[in-house]
Image 1 (cartoon, rainbow, N blue to C red):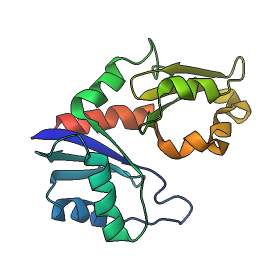
Image 2 (cartoon, helix red, strand yellow):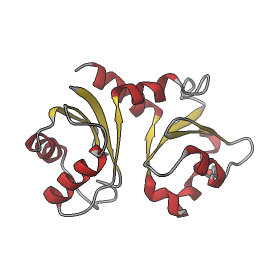
Image 3 (cartoon, rainbow, N blue to C red):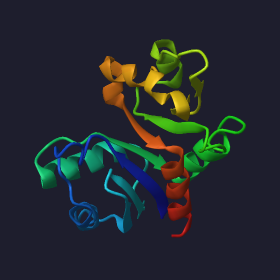
Length: 180
């Protein structure tokens, strides 16, 4: 059994695309995934499966659309891929939550970190970004986060192929997946 994390995009935001976490766990459990656990309401699911990684995102998306009646983009990472995101982060990334808001932009193929780095805009003295394997690490100075240019990525076509998690959520998901 391989352990995975599924990151759902665009659910339970502003009263739209409501997906109760108990129903989400049931949907994946009914589809044959094992040890299904959710973390907070934004669509973070840890599960185990003997199925191949290839095609898993599409399979989970089909299960969720059939259950909830609307498409839900999903980004899946294996336990080892998630560990690499955490352990390969830039030096000091996420280490100063009192000073920086640190987020991980998880990318859905075919979007690449290199492409995101071409379109992301950074405000000097406020924003920093680094490419990673299937992710972009983004930090913004907390005291000036209103001046950050990170929100401009929402207006790009590439935005539909990413989902964003805080550094705290990312590391907690690795802890949860390791508890299985």
